[in-house]
Amino acid sequence: MNWKIGWWVMTVLALIIAAYAIALLFVPAMRAPFLQKRFATVPLAAYLHLAGSGIALAIGPFQLNTRLRNRFLHIHRWMGRTYVVSVLLGGVAAFALATMSQAGLPTHMGFGLLAVLWLFTTGNAYRHIRVGDRVSHRRWMIRSYALTFAAVTLRIYLPLSQIAGIPFDPAYQTIAWLCWVPNLIVAHERCTCRGLSSMTIMETGDGSGLGRVYVRWSRMLPSQLVTRVRLPSCSALRVQR
Image (cartoon, rainbow, N blue to C red; front, side, top):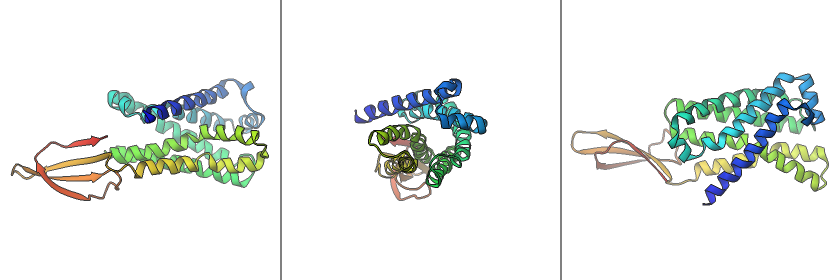
């Protein structure tokens, strides 16, 4: 139940900010003064970042929902490809925009590293699914979307800092890191501390009625086979909580 509530909260917030990002593309009057300058000086980067980020933000929650993924696998795959392309375009544009962000070097570095890690985690997720490693793919997608969700946390922390009376520059310098570092830490902990929630069982038959079955716990790296047991022959399967 707690997971369902969390997913709904995440999804609603993501869709609101995604809609806001897309609206900025078509309604210039909604753009803040600094954003108007970006559209005037680097329009391609501004358009690609808002479009790519908005699409990735809207797609992500549905990609992470296990029931939807299992029920609509074909759609999941096409949405996944769309997500990867959106992050690629939005991430490259984000890195370019980071070099001219407000409040100086700390924000340049914070948003720049966010863009690099966003591309890196998404690229890793894509690489793992291409070789059929679904467990690692899901972990890297969780990390990737945690960084995508920085678009939401940024817009939570900014108004809170203004309500608290913190001057804009120091607040923005801090939020350039705060909007994504905690997200990534939480995602990483979720990926590495799930215990026995997922394991892969692969059979190699030896003709004796018994199979040698290898079990890889979800918290281990893909290359680490940590347990060997002997069980009656069975087909390959995946067990997930």
